[in-house]
Structures are given as structure tokens and as C-alpha cells.
Image (cartoon, rainbow, N blue to C red; front, side):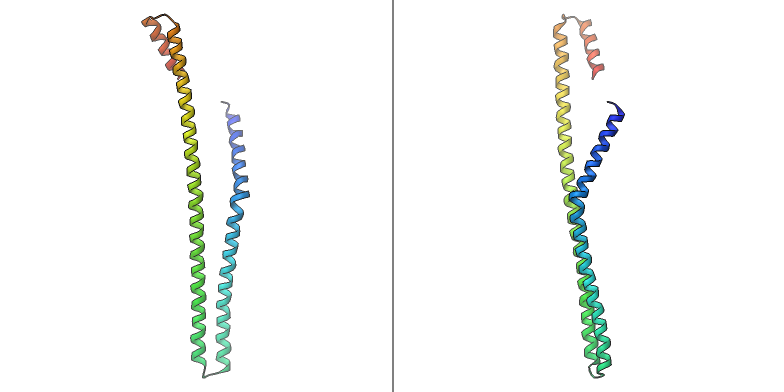
Length: 156
């Protein structure tokens, strides 16, 4: 087969693969990442609001200082905990999606291997039948058989 034709065919297949990924795989991943980023930003904003509330309560009342600090600390801890949960959830979802994509690719590779094996089986059986046909057409002679088998072996 011509190497240029092979390279062109591979380039076309690669371009189709890139198009497929950019059209069907990339947008859901980007959308999921954007949603996760917004949730994390909201969690961090909640933490900042908690710090601001702590400062206001310290200025307003000296008596409620301890209560206000505990409340703000709880809000900060919850916001940080939620931000951590969101990050872990995003990691888990990304890993699950990656595993699903890998499993699909492995299944497709397995199908391609099976198709290639079947094609090779058909070619080998056709060559075997052709060799047997050539042997049967000639007269039965040990020298002719040896020459014919050598020729068939070279063709394989």
C-alpha cells in the first residue's frame, strides 16, 4: 500500500476523531467544570461573608463577641467543608467520566481487533483453498508438489 495514502487516511481519521471529541465529548466536560467552579466560588464567597459578619459583630457588642466568633467560625468551617466536598465530588465525577470514556474506547478497540482477525481468517482460508486448487490441477508428482508448496509459502 502506498505510504502517502496511508498517511492521508490516518490524517483524515484523526481529524474525524478530533471533530467528534470537540463536538460531543468536550462540551459536557467544560459545562460540568464551569458548574463546579461556580459552586466553589459560591462556597468561598460564603466564607468571606462569614468573616465580614465576625468583624461587624465585634464592633457592635463586646458582650456578644464570643457568640459572634463561634458563629463565624462555624460558618467558615461549613463553607470550607462544603468547598472540599464540592472539589471531591468534581474529582469523583471527572474520574467516573474518564473511566466511562476509557471503557468505551477499550470496547471499540476489541471490536476492531475481532474484525481484523476475521478478515485475516478469510484471507488465509482463501489462500489455502487457492493453494489446494493449484495442487489438485497439476499432476500428482512429488517434485511438482514441493515446488508448488514453496511458491505458496512465499506468497504467504
